[in-house]
Image (cartoon, rainbow, N blue to C red):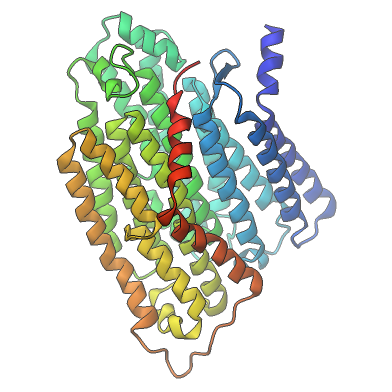
Length: 499
């Protein structure tokens, strides 16, 4: 037992580095109590060390550690790199965020909470035990509750945090109740044991269905899927822009990783195999994939339709984020290796285009003091480079070639068509057309409306321009040269679920 624990601890080095960074930031903030970016640089150093340790695990075989509590495999490592990249970018964004700089206290706790949130998301990606899933979900949720209301002097910030806490508490409570029912049915809380029990025993279908639906509530809350999305617009609007951007990418990625692992391993029928939609065969006629397909359609449709009426860009991007969760849920409906790889490809391109859009909103809000769409009137003439990069991000979010967003949707639709889900692919394509309308509203304001006579040319710093280019260039490049990304995603999912 001791040897297993020591070996498991060695494989948990990236998470250990995050834990040490978190503790060090708290102590540093207590000792220094100085404002500035010192704690941000310490956080960045900790994240770079974590990235190095994570890269050392990439060549190792899949391992199940701490007695099937946690998996270290290529699938979880892929999502950890994604989350880590988001954290590094958001940390850099935060160093330039005026609203955060105006907080009348040290910001060390802000960066320590960001690291704690990252740690929770890391644990979510590899959790193979139902209690581990719940605890990691709670760690990430509690950290994000505090961060959502961090600028408590700002308008709507405290309200956003309170709504987030209420929705999160209800959702996680329902998930825990579903876990308890599933444990009662199978006698196991690790997903491999649950799979064995479902295959060998005659489980009550009604109770299993209730347990599954309750657990889906927890997953749905984390990924902002309809009808568990009500917290998203208010929290995204009231939270600091940096935290909104982080939640829209990293938190959603961890939620999808945990949901895919739960369904793929728990309900996989080995007789069907990894390459087909065998995860649903274990239910003996109960169409779970139809339930997820309905949630996917509702999520993308409601997200896109409600976004049409939004004038606040953070709120508009919140509904856009809901719609994109609906697109990615199409890959979960298929649940083949091809569908899972398509989700992973989509998340990489989504990181660049969505964080890019939020970064433009942040730096424009820093200059104009407004997040409203009217603040972008004539932006293409007042700040041409920022206007052009925003065009790239919005076209990619729509899925227009040759941007990376087109490649992400192409692989999702290809997985659907290969699995003969033609009607779902058509609904997804129609929703992409709808999304073009509200993105074009922003483009119209930037380039087809003249700025007011009182509006001045907006100057941005060299650092801000560099960050914009770092996000915009991959958004174009991955739309033209995407082979290595596709190969990496497919390789990461090839050994998925193997211990």
